[in-house]
Length: 104
Image 1: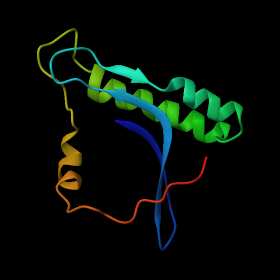
Image 2: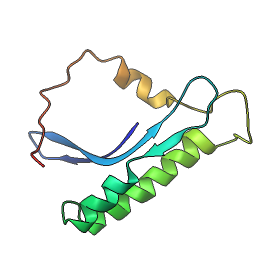
Image 3: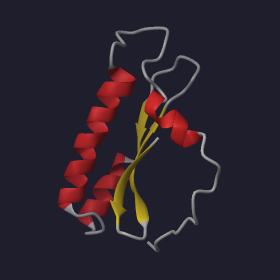
Image 4: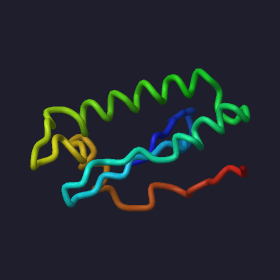
């Protein structure tokens, strides 16, 4: 899973990867947070503004608490992961649109 920032206009939806990821193994191992150093490097280099970073970290913690940590003390089963509300989105035909990669 990736931490992303979504912005919209009347004609487009832009999804920006905000560096931080979580690896969720399906074999019972605990999840791993990845690339927080890249997140910090982007803030330090001015590639990620503080307001977007703060919002991302708060949303990231809510996601972890709601979908990966909730009712897991420890348990043999996952909580709502992948989230039920994403199943309709995951069922849409791909690709949803062209992928645009910003330089840098």
